[in-house]
Every structure is written in structure tokens, then in C-alpha cells.
Image 1 (cartoon, rainbow, N blue to C red):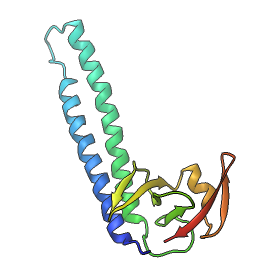
Image 2 (image 1 turned 90 degrees about the horizontal axis):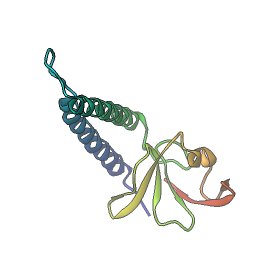
Image 3 (image 1 turned 180 degrees about the horizontal axis):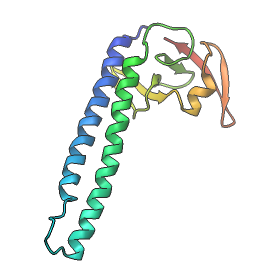
Length: 151
């Protein structure tokens, strides 16, 4: 089986760009509601809504920052063929249908008809299998996993 890792990288980039756009849009909307007119009397309910909107805007701003960071990480990671588990690798664990992409954390997604899940190089799952090759096993949370393939 072959995997077009460049197509996979483009898909991850596209997912992150979409998430970034949604976070920025939500930030702009929340920020607009967070403004209180200067010099005017403000009702308690309006002030409360403005504070809540400001808090939401801060959360969306943090999400946008995370997605920008993920895009930079994707640009920096090599998706070249590899036989060991490292950033940029695609890993298939025995008994699992979906494959893991070591890059940034994502929800499950499809690329070229296959199911993938992005995991961060900071994830405990990655740390447990870092540097291993196909055919090797590792333990995580009292469960044993076998690495079936690495691309």
C-alpha cells in the first residue's frame, strides 16, 4: 500500500486553514459584541453581555493562535518516507482501520479514501512509540499496541 504523503500534508494544511478562518470569524463577531459605547450609560445586562463576549473573543483569539502555530508546524515537518515513527510519519497500528499522522492533533478525517487521525508529537501516544519501527510493540495505559506499518 502506498500513501501520497504530499496529498496528506495538503489535506492537513487545508483543515487547519479552515479551522483558522472559523476561529478568526468567531473572534470578529464576539469582539464586535464586546464593545461598550464610551461616555454613555450602560445597562447591567449590556455590560454583562459585553464581558461575556470579550471572554469568548479571547478564547477564539487563542484558538486562532493555535491554528497559526499548527500551520507553521506543518510547514516545518518533513513528510518524506520513513521507516521509524517520527514527526511526519504515518503509522498504522495493528487491528486499527485508521492511520495516525504524526504532525498536529486533528479530529478524524479522510484523505484519498482512507481514515486518518492527526496526533501531536507532544501526545503520550506518540511519546510511547517514538523511534519504533514496523513490527515493534509498545505499552500505553496498560495496553499493548503493535506497529503494523510506518510510511
